[in-house]
Amino acid sequence: MSIIGAWGFEGQDLTRDGFVLTTGVKPTYSVTSPPLGASTRSLDFGSSTPGGNLRLPVSPASTDFWMHGNFVFGGNNSLNDSFEFGWFGGGVLAGWITRQDITNLLQIVVDGVVVATSVVAVPLDAWKRLHVHVDYQNSAAGFVRVYQDGDTVTPMVAFTGNTNPSAYGAISGIRLQGHRMNVDDIVVLDPNDGVAPTDVDDIAFTSIGLRVPNVDGTDTGFTATPGTGSDYEDIDEVPNSDAEFLRATAASVASTFGFEDATLGRPLAVKVKVRTVRSGTTAGVNIAVRQRLGPTVVDTADRPCPGDGDVHQIFNTDANGAAWTSTAFDNSEFGVVSKT
Image (cartoon, rainbow, N blue to C red; front, side, top):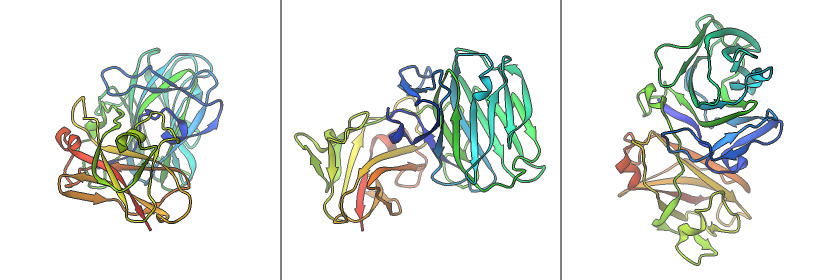
């Protein structure tokens, strides 16, 4: 199994964090964050009921997947049902978790129809971890099960039946919408692709923390701008600054960096976020993301380098193909390679 989606909202920029606003006023970044975790920011949806989408880079290998999220709700009224923690199938919102108006009970919605309601309400003004296991299939064997606060055995609400009655396509993204709520630590896990991590319970208390580069690495092919100090000092701003950057003027050039050490236990996965602005083709039109651990270097497959955009890469294993440890992360370098 592997983590195929992860959003901690630490970039403090909706575009850089990959949140595509579709309804309402933009949510804001808040220093309110879940306790006992690595997070320093959450996404505050305020009272305008914004909604947005998070795109998955790959679809789950089979029909089932897990979604994890950290939520705090600040109101209990007739706008409860604006809450959507959902999944897209073939570009269509195929199902979601919502809150019943006034009661604050959790509900499961499939293809626009409420199919199950919890007995116990979710609390107000307190962080709540929700774990959603979906078996998404056009048959009576499908299911949606919602667990809470690290318990992945006994669901607080569940539905068994056709979870894809309209036969939409493969899962392609996540939906977030709500009124007076904060959201953090969104994780999507594929339990069937044979990649580490190996325990579904690993996501139960997942916390996504920000790590910025703090030392130049082994590869130093890019040129820093303005370049008055170490190269890493031109790419360590949060949110990012387009006034400081690294530039490649030829293909097959690489730069890597060491990052702040891991804290709060063993890393499950590492997500590298690269802001790109490409002008011309002298350095190629593609990019690869590199991880380096000692003498071992692994580059991802080439992918288009946006003229103005982002490249996100999740590494579920270290450069040696092993499950992450704190030591492996602390001794790894990450960077980019310009490609033809």
